[in-house]
Image (cartoon, rainbow, N blue to C red):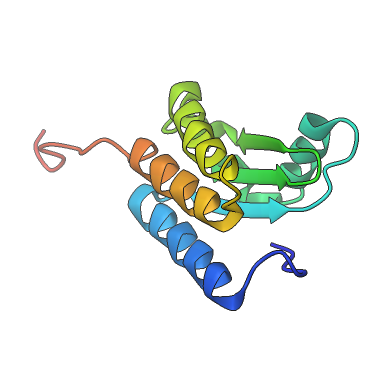
Length: 130
């Protein structure tokens, strides 16, 4: 995540803790990008997601362009098995609610928490039984 002058160190730490918690809760990989997404924000976000390399399939990218007031969430094929469109939409809603009050870092944290909750793998019961 590019830092620039957008976040304080405390805010960066909060985002990083939320990112790690979402990863721990889901087993998925989460990445956050804050910066210019260009003219076609979705295309740019998809390219950023692809640049995650081997992890892209099991990754969720949150891309935010504060200047354009745009948010994109991109999920890889494996990640999509656990985090569906509804879960991603709820994550987006929790972020944009905070963004609307001017809380960029808090919105990202809220979104990561929501995405982590909705991307949890279902419990496997009786895995060792035939």
